[in-house]
Length: 121
Image (cartoon, rainbow, N blue to C red; front, side, top):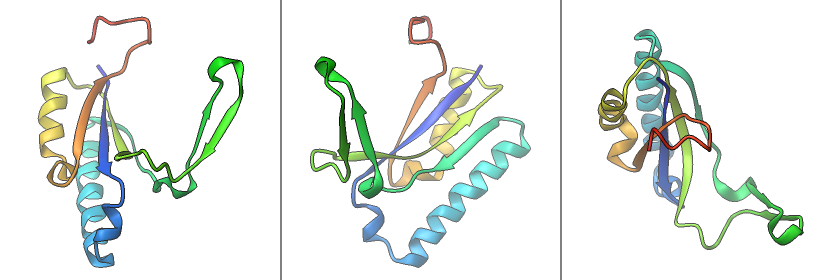
């Protein structure tokens, strides 16, 4: 089965680190991803840029809308993800605990499933 580890980080957290601290955090995440890949449990991984260049698109009430970031109401942002494969729920949760980002962020574990299928809830 496939699971996603979503990295929820506080907005502005990156700006509190020195460049060396940021590089060290990134290196720890890269090493974690390389380990998962070597074990055959990583399907994809990406780090996401901050909210400054983000855009939110919606068509609420039939009206097209695009809102440029940063988003004042945002307290967290998705900082990146690990898309896991060949793992069960318990293994995905264990890997979330091992993820270096769990030391400074929240790591959300989600099963991949069609939006109409709640059997993995």
